[in-house]
Amino acid sequence: MPPCLLLTRPRAAAEAFAQSIRAAGWRGEVLVAPLMRIAHLPLAEADLEGAATLIATSRHAIEALARATGRRDMRLWVVGPGTAAAAQAEGFEKLQVAGGDAQALLRDIAQAGARGPFLHLCGAHVAADIAGSLRRHDHEARAQIVYRQDALPLSSAAKARIRAGGDLLCPVFSPRSGRLLAAELSALDMSRARLHMVSISPNADAATAHLRGFSRRIAARPDNAHMTVEIIACQAKLEPVEKPS
Image (cartoon, rainbow, N blue to C red):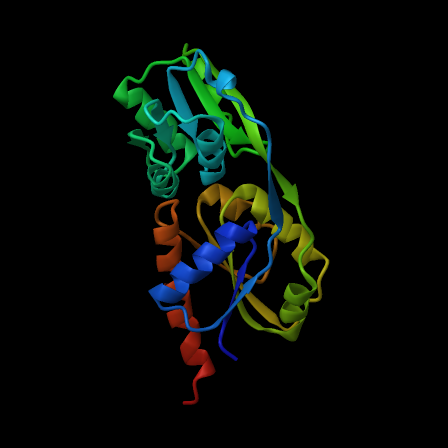
């Protein structure tokens, strides 16, 4: 059977990625099985007072900001092109786009000479303490949680598909989603499955590195475009195995 793409991102992000990966040339099954659900938390315009520069590291933070205020003229740093696209769609004007992950964001802020006070709008689970790092470099900075990433169990359809066997590609878009996926896989009979992990960063890859018997790929840059490149390359490698000689 052709390889199956198992998408475990929150549903809206997974469905958007499913659409884009099909347009990029994915020909196999796509199974959306979220391991997290986004729960937005209150954010008021008053919470933004005193911040000279806002930082957003996900489109969920952009959504929270857009709901909290009608202003679109504040200075805003975003982690990468996906978050930038979400900010542009909401009408934010003064954007600085970093290199795709927390380390690149902190480096780019330093190189640009950006000044605070900074306010990082973030989720309850973060890959890096950006506000803390800024404070350690003598900036005034704080973080505000504007959404939760509530864990979900792997769907029965996904479990059944894994037990059925064959090649499954598992994109890992964050360290936490990798840990959740690894915990679910550890409880399953995977004797018939051949899993192929495609991770957005080395940190995301490390979350599943203790699992044995999987092929692994890491995107050249931490964004959807480079994840797509790796997934399509993995498909090209796997499909000849399924074709008659």
